[in-house]
Length: 265
Image (tube, rainbow, N blue to C red; front, side, top):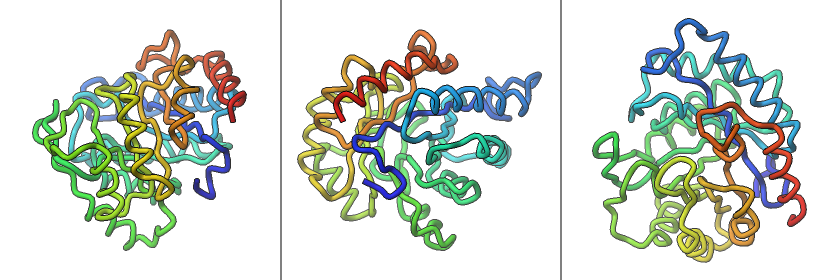
């Protein structure tokens, strides 16, 4: 695993920031103050529940952009910066769906890792999606952030891969050609689990090269099976009130889940 993730079978929890300025669902009446207040509330519940790390995401910025806007990058960075004094665990960032913007925000805020779609070609809800792994990798180098880890989500949500290679080959190729520091396996949309056979195939193909994480749909009922295969998981929806992605974090759900995780570590 990584120096900043000391836990065996690490649980990285999402802090879903509310819709940012410029997005259709942005709450102009609540403004930035409300975004910060809600994020801090979720962070406190996640940390009290015992998660190992937190990742900030802008899942509420629907419909999603493939290239970030200046106002959303500025607001996203401001929210994370305001939350930092409340963080007791390592944190990462993910600006959906712009890997270069994600690296820029990570550098500005001191994040330990970035999650994004860096490789592949997809038919998606956002149109044809052809990410660029080289530009964010070079930005990372130019910023002097060789310590920043890049988590490659290799099968994008809200999309279908146009690459016909088996998923395990795409995973190994991303490590070889694009310097992935971790491989993430996702389900078809946020909150839905990855195909168990895909997760196993990727984990077996990658071996000890880099950690492999289940990226979506992890819950209290499948976490034992997930951790028997994966290095860890990234979890958001299951920790929300009623298991609804768009709700606030439910602290009791977090604690019950982490009790199960700790029983199998």
